[in-house]
Amino acid sequence: MTPAILLLLLVQAPRPFAYRGFAPGMSYRDFAARARSIAQGDSDILACQTMHSTAQVMDCGVRVRDPVDSARFYLSANVIEGRTSVIAFVDSGKVALVRRVQDDMRKRLGVPRRERSMWEWTKGRRFIRLNWRGGRDWRVISITLNDRDVMNRIANYVPKRKPRAP
Image 1 (cartoon, rainbow, N blue to C red):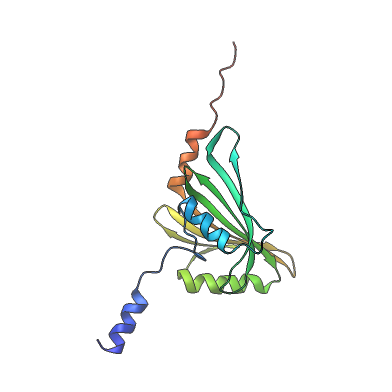
Image 2 (image 1 turned 90 degrees about the horizontal axis):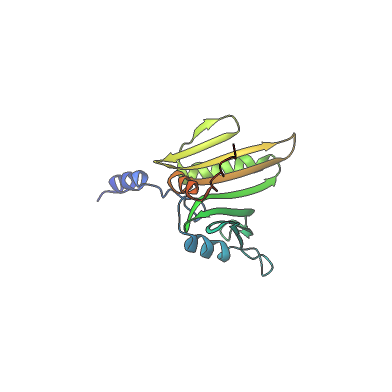
C-alpha cells in the first residue's frame, strides 16, 4: 500500500465511542475494574449504594486520577441491571480547563454538536455530553456518558402509587 492510502484508511477508521476508557452502557464489572484501576490512592475506594427497594439499581462514585495525563476528577455511575445508564466525570478549575477538555474530546470523538455551554456527540441511543458553568475565573465541567436504552429500564423499578381511598 502506498503511504497516502494507508493514511487515508487511518483517518477514516472509526473512533471508539468512549471517553477515558469508559463507554455508555458498559457493564458494571468493566466500569468497576476501570474505576478501581485509576482511583487516586488507597483511601479512595469505589463506593456503591443500591436503591432502597432493589439491588438492581445502584449509584457508585470515586475520586480518580487518569494515569495518561494525571487529570483528577470525581467519577460516578448509575447502574441498572448490571449496565451503566449514566457515567459522569466532574472537575473544576481555571478557565483554561474548559479549553483543554474541549480540545481533548474533539481529538478523541471528532466534531461535536454545539449549544451554549454544551457539546454533544451522539451514536444511536447513546451520547457523550460536555457541559460547563462558571464565573469570571473558574469553571466546573461535567462529562456525561449516557445510554438511553439502559436508562429506560429504570421504569421497571419505580414504586407503584397506591390507590387513594375514596
